[in-house]
Length: 246
Length: 246
Image (cartoon, rainbow over all chains, first blue to last red; front, side, top):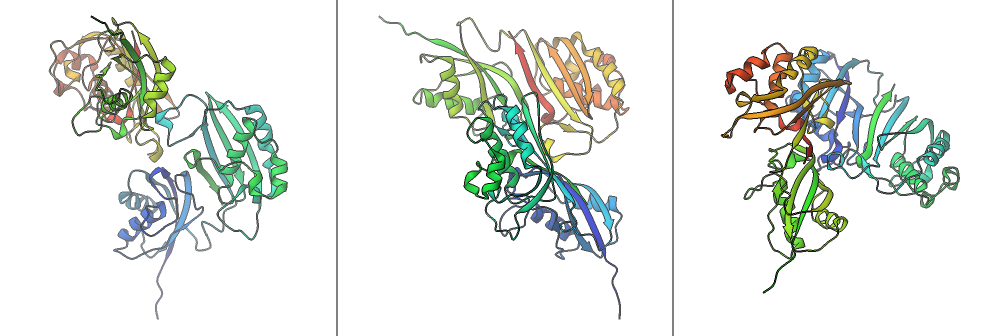
């Protein structure tokens, strides 16, 4: 009889999603999770170790603070894990923080709330911002958008604002939603219990359409529970998984 | 007998230098000028038209407002030129402004002064800033750097701060040089009559070395007229050609 000491490792990671087909590992596609698992595999002499991410960010979406965990028998101090995993990652993915946590912690199931940011450049097109913000050339009624975004706060069925995935339950709780504008850059903030696929991008796309006068009522779109009533899902380049609370 | 009406076109252009081997056209290398001339050539049914840039930015260097001119027999309004040239450019180069100017104007010879910016990230490494700012992990004495940067203001022989090109005259006049810090991002500003090759990057590299205690006197380095006395030429990723005055 024997037992092996194992450790659960929690990592916080930032990445530029531009060159990846999203977080989730896929065969023959570059993904964030695929890159990270390849790095961790090298540190374990070729042994595959599964990682569990908090959020499956889509293709092109960025993260300031995504979280994942994995289990290992390797006994390393957190700062050594951080150096070691980063060592095999390319410069567009960066492990910011490593913590050794108890085996009751789960990066996905224990999420209390998440924050997403979305940026829109209302100034002239800028090639230096092209993979960091959505560029919008139309004039927007930002005051109207600021008012309408408040309608998504609360517990709602968000079926109108998702696509591509079937859920058992479309109800999510949004704790805060706001828009600020600074030097012609719109910053959207969404804090919620969880988000459906394309939900933030579809809310942003709908608010932009409201801003240029095409659609006009978030409340009605929510009540319709019909994806066709909402606006288009806006580009992934402006979306950032910003923060996760446990 | 006949004469042909010709127009001189002045363009202001912004670009992300990451994927280019600098401004100046080279055979079999992607360059900003090469891309722009290919676009203008298409607009002239295959006729090659030479462009004259204000500044030969190096590989990886960005521009907020580079200027170039060319001559054409095509009679188009400025806003049409802007749409037409941008139409054949990829999304990392963008013509911001087109003006029809007199044939006495020259984008390179008529420059009165130029402004360069250089950005250094003193916070933790951020993959989303990796091609936009130099990342510096050492602690810097920013107050000392702010004091030392003032030593380059004035007319000086900058031979200590250039390399790779032989000049007849190494004297340039710097009208202003300053450093500000905001949320852990250092912003260097240099305004001068002209700049030698690698000059801004070598001044920044030397100031960073001053900041962590390696070198300590810009004035002495200037007087030495010896490249070996200055610090290293800092990475191109943080450098922006920001503004040109005529």
